[in-house]
Image (cartoon, rainbow, N blue to C red; front, side):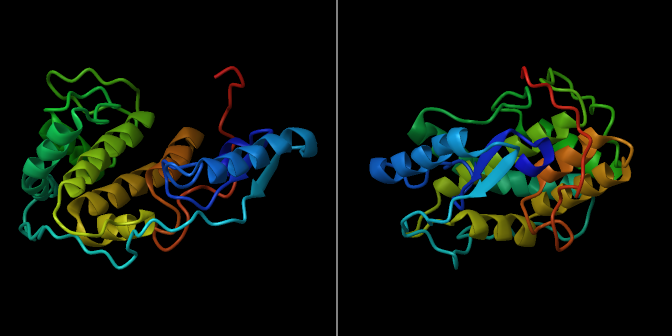
Amino acid sequence: MSEAVVPPRALWVPFPLGRPLGVVDDSEFQKSVMRTAFGLLDTATEPTIEDYEIQAPGEGLSENWSCPLNLSTQSSGSLTDRLLAEVALLRPWAIETRRQRGRTLFGASGAGEDQVDELARAFASIAETGEVTSAPVVVDVAWAFDMPLLARHIADDLRCFYHEALAAQPGDTAPNHDALNRWIFGETVLGEALLLVADGLTKASDSPMAQLVRGLLIPEGHYRGGSAFPEETNFPINPGT
């Protein structure tokens, strides 16, 4: 993302997505990351992406994790039917996580937390048709974004649902970022749908926004064996946003 938008300065950190400062509750490590980032104000004289070379202390998360829930949905049928069947298997677990936490991060797309089926149908429709310019028509959902950016937020909501379902699963280990992505793209219908949507964005080669959204949609290394970000982009950046 930083390579695509070319900010004046950025610090790339080798931590899981959502933890830009490293380990939770390790204030000294977090302050070290922040000091390095603020140091770029003095050292960066041109657009700069600097690597933070120090790995975060381990948290006991397993790279060899496997999902304890058997997602043995039917292998035949439409993408929509298979994605809905997968969502149905995960739903009780996601509800349990929300009950325990008293909150959810689901809803960035504009859908309500009880509208995951509608979201799954919408995303499967985008995947099957390759339509990345017009928003899918879904009754009772007021989309918060226009396409193609909407596709990214629908995907984020669906991934949030899957992550919340995993959080309620029994077991002593939890997946790290890489293990979670391997599960999504190697064992779920959602991963199949994500790649198909990315293919639709690829075909919209005349839209820099579509190419940027593709990069935001697929983690590094999971798009057809490489990066989903375009090598170059003319995506217009508004410095006031």
